[in-house]
Image (cartoon, rainbow, N blue to C red; front, side):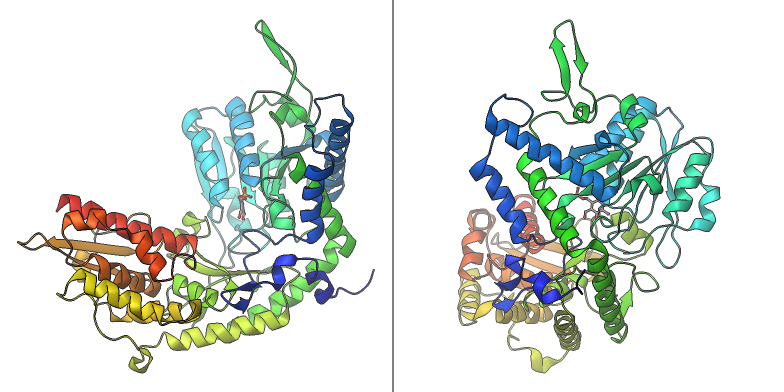
Length: 559
Ligand code: PLP
């Protein structure tokens, strides 16, 4: 096979040569989802354009063609994960759905009060919440495996957690924050000793490791197509045949039955017993195209290139003094998580976004891990084989600039005037709109938001409490309101993220000194449109804005 050439590989992904915020897109959020190659997009379109028909149902030609492509995709997955039997491959909508299926089917059938489920501190919410739900129903107990300082499940402490009551061990092959391979062999062999079942969350591993279900010898393995250049809404549950055969169906409906009568229903054989309803057959067929696409380059080749890129990025990051990694040592795959001392992770992420660099900040759907690491959140770079060394250089350069600019340098502040004073709310609002209208592009608007953040007075620490806390804002944020005898409101607010502080100044420019009636009638969507901000704010920032406005409205009806 030829040497891997990233420039050729990259060309397959139409989105990668697009601009975001007027800058070439640097997509470093592959742990959340990967971009899709043209062949995957074309395959899904082809299904709908050329042979769209429901699978397994009709006797007509189109349905036969769709069914055959759908079942061929199952064979493709079986080969990809080296499962012994074809009927061990169950289609789901993703990793989350797979874990819920196991919890609700196997867990519901087998768990007894007092039984124990082992998870680890590094699990994604998808591998925590389904277990909490079934544990509560069945009176089972969840125990949490500790991590080493390098962030993997601590092998040396495993013996303390296994006992005869252990029924399920469910853990990630690779955590979506830590990026390191857990001691999977050792955990599986201990589980076997105690006759516990093993559930492996392979969401992060499936795109980077060659999988072999037979040699891994776990009981269940779950993953999602969208993390490996495939479509969203498709996933795989691999399960050992004997276990799957003994499990009751999770959902009932069409497709999963042999016969239905009001005297009783019989269920179909594997794998259909677990595939109730019309499946996402177009997605499944496109998923097979993504596996063929990976195979045409060679998963090992892609992984080798990713390794070089990860090492390069990691080493560059180690040279930045204020960068602190969430765990010791270089990750095994291109998932690198860190914080920047003195900067909020959302401020760094939104500053990078203004430069076209997409990466993730926050809790990464791993709130218990953040608590364990004593972090409010972190920044995650997650790489794929289409990322380049020059993208890493650009990211490092912009990160360094951002870190420098967070120094409290008064020369950086263009907009020093406080906008929260005792003037009419509409003057402040108009002034804000005029200022933003003079700015071109998201980069300069983003800079202005950050500078505004610096102008907001810090709120008294005593006022930053549960009453003033803004629910639904991903950063810590507080808002406190008082009303004068004329019925006008005066708000004070604060946040640990500069970008949120800046947005607060903008919001208060409109709401400060309003009466409760004016507050309730104010159209904040139109205001943000006029500022030219609506289309640029990320979903989490938009949620933040919504949460601040809701808190203001709530206070306006209560104070
Ligand atoms: N588990 C891990 C480790 C993940 O990284 C993710 C997604 O990021 C999931 C589970 C959930 O995957 P999905 O949303 O595709 O169901």
